[in-house]
Image 1 (cartoon, rainbow, N blue to C red):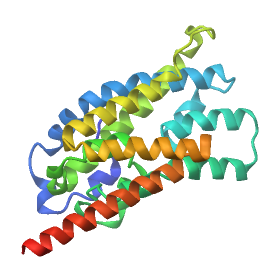
Image 2 (cartoon, one colour):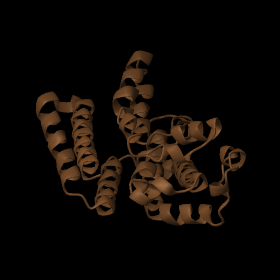
Image 3 (tube, rainbow, N blue to C red):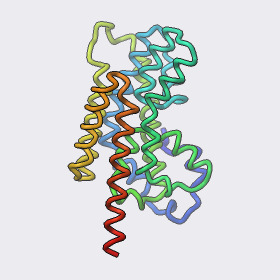
Length: 246
């Protein structure tokens, strides 16, 4: 299966996107994280079939929603026939963190409305984590989009594979739910290694602890807001220091 999406084919016009080997670099760079995505996708496909839905629903969710953790939650909401308003609120709370991704994701390197639309749709945690390094701010459009397309293709494929083989996995098997948590831990460690900044992960942990202490299970949005406030203040202070030096 080709990793090049129709959107990629229609948006490769800038000189930077014509650099040879950009797709190969993207796939190579994404491979370690993809190896973590595949088991999680298979687990989600198995969960769909164990929920009583037809296997092809797994492919539909993976293609149309393409939001990892939200897809796991949607299975429960769909099988419970939850009202649309509850589904909408859940999607907002779970994916609200994507609003803050724009602070560091190199969207300025993505030119063209179709390319920007595709990049926004496929802006997952994994793609964001791989573009946190400072050099990613200068990557070509082709490389960034190829990273996102690599995750999309592998996610849809692994979910479909898990759904097709879900009947072979016993219902008593435990541990599939931990796949999401383990994967986020790996991404966090990888991001820390890339940025080599102690204050940032420390502030994230403190924000999470304060959010959990004040809001319990509804901690996500408040914790992200506190962490974003820390990043904005840190950026303002560093920018002011640079201006003084100049």
